[in-house]
Amino acid sequence: MAVTHIYFDWSKTLALPKTRDIFMSPHATVNQRLAVLYPDTLSILDYLCKKGYILGIISNTHKSPTNFVRALSETGLIHYFKGAIALSSDSTLCKKACTKIFKYCLKYDGLLAHPEKAVMIGDDYAKDVIGGLNVGMRAIHVDRDSGNTLPRTKSVRQLKSWIRVSTLSDLLQCF
Image: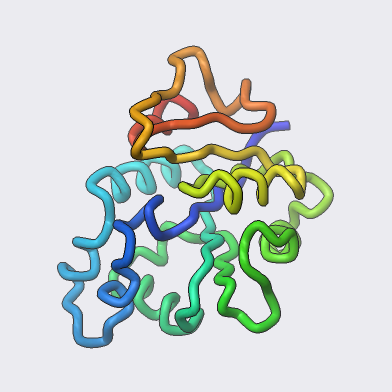
């Protein structure tokens, strides 16, 4: 089945580690908030949206889901995320790799019966990759420290379980 939905982890996947306070600060400017993103984040989000994928976020945090969505809105990033946005700080959810947070997103986006149509992309193998695989999703591990890159022959259509990339830009070879 073709992939239709892509879920991203936030910290160390889309945004630099330990920058959530800056991103969510009501006193930060839009430019300060956008500066927490990795240099290839906006271009890959734009690319995936133009290709027709529905994007969402699944992230562990103790921060307020309402404030996080507000920050996404105030920076203009919310237009990229038409799919579910699930944060572990939501009292009805749990921390990744708990299956409940993944199943919430799949159910919200109408994919509970077809989890293979979704890909989880994140930096933490145990939480993001294993968590996604445990509910039937495909997964991509963004391992910025490894230097390993995606083989050129690999595409999302060939992805049966999970692969490793070293940057978000490597995703251009997948999708």
